[in-house]
Length: 339
Ligand code: NAP
Ligand code: 3JN
Image (cartoon, rainbow, N blue to C red):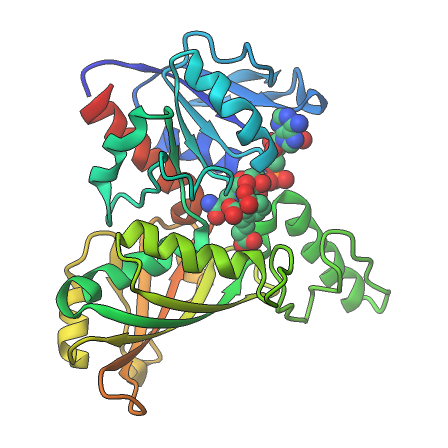
């Protein structure tokens, strides 16, 4: 990267935005100016970047003058309203919401899987970051698909509360404390108690009985992998974990992949780390993935009920690789190749 860039973080005070600031810092992204934007509730608040305070500004359509790259994580409504204004000012938007993901003129990118799709940003000036559950799954699927052609995927997720934002992190912490002290738990973010519980309900229910989160996994996987023939069915579940989404992934392929071959393919894929030694109790867990940028895969075994099938257990930090790290990696590709 030969020059520095003016970068805006929209939703800078949120769980994802905060992680974006940390990751820009950690990866030493070449930032000239960092502009932090949020709602008027946060106007004037100070956030730290590289040891210096940066004042949070209120998001308006004029917020993007002089900005090269705008990282959005302030919800789909804000992305729908403000990405076009940012793009019209000359910024390239990397959007973390679902607002633009399925727009045919907007690329949906996981850098390890389809980095060349970044080039398609020119039509609308927007690149979409996939849903966190999709990102970690497609990283595990891609090397298997390239080798043996994936026909069908059955996935069940175990998603951390940080996927629902800062208020949900607080809700799990407070509920756990109250219940352990014999007091009743209040719920505001979720429709039921989340502490010591599991909710098979992420995002809203649709007419077909699936949740929107489940349908995101179906549609986004096809778009990122560039193959509409991959069949995906998903059940997404919220669990009382703070950081790190886990997934049970059953894959049916066009030709057989032995467990040894799967291990070899997965081990050599960028961004993936195989942790698979059940005899020593080694398998991926969210407590180990939290704070990391890799996607971890283990429990690799044959599905003995079909001719060509594998079962995998896939874990990643949902706020990092599932959101902020993926967005900053896209920004790095933009900075290196396109801006
Ligand atoms: P969060 O912790 O609740 O933070 C929300 C952020 O949006 C805050 O900075 C908030 O600012 C800002 N915001 C809200 N309303 C605004 C407005 N009217 N104008 C300007 N800023 C506004 O939520 P989060 O977990 O960080 O998630 C934020 C968004 O990121 C989600 O809605 C989703 O679209 C996306 N996301 C994507 C993934 C993924 O899978 N890739 C994962 C999680 C989230 P204030 O502090 O001023 O209210
Ligand atoms: O619940 C999770 O674990 C991930 C949540 C993602 C999310 C939360 C609120 C709105 C999204 C998303 O990225 O799909 C959205 C959205 O639809 O933008």
